Amino acid sequence: MNSFLQSYLNELKVFFSNPELELRILLKNSSIKKKDIILSNFEVKDIDTIKFNNAFQRRIKREPISKIFNYKNFWKYNFYVNCDVLDPRPETELIVEKILEFYPKKDQSLKILDMCTGSGCLAITLAKEYSKAKVIGTDISSKALEIAKFNAHKLNCINQIDFLECNLLENFEIFDIVVSNPPYLSEFEYDNTSSEIQLFEPKISLIAANEGLEFYQKIANILPNILNKNSRAFFEIGSKQAKETIAIFRSKNLKCLKIVNDMQNLNRVLILKKC
Image (cartoon, rainbow, N blue to C red):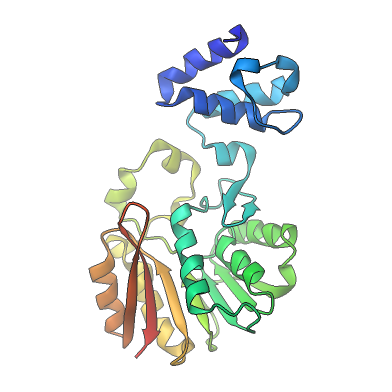
């Protein structure tokens, strides 16, 4: 292997279980030609060495690749992210998958609400999938909403979406679809997350009071006022929260239609309707 690469690879071995993959990702994102780097045929001239070295130093301090290069892929799209928003995660794509199953006609004029929108990944993805939909994305963080608006402009759907700074929702109106990936970690669970999460993801987007159930309790109070009998709600949950969250929603006359499991076969999404 090229001696330039070997020195970096040796250092990465100290921190990561798959150092070659880490190195290839850093090189690709620092590539002048924006192409995959083949380690066996590597040439220094193919990369921006200043950008690479900066990224390398940040990565060995455990900063996620997404935060270093300010992007994360979600569904079919590329979203700008920084430390003010939670990275979109593959598990959250389950919400989009299930909505498309329940609402297969993409030309419907749907009203969609996304609470705790963060980067805007759900609101924007649904706006892109349903070109006639009107979407509202809410968040308590003004910094997160700036990112969401940036992403909506970038992906050419800002005219479909209103982003509102508020605690879940301010004005009640009826929606066809309600989605949310709210904070759901308890303090104990948060304390046991990785340093990458604790140092580089916004704590406000992760922790909820009442053993992680706070936002489901608040949302359950809102839902009866904003759903009709044909509306559906889709919420991401912690893998061990299905029983508790279903009980919370049931107490407000909201029926769980389905629990959706993720790729690890863990409970991840609840689908609800008004009784």
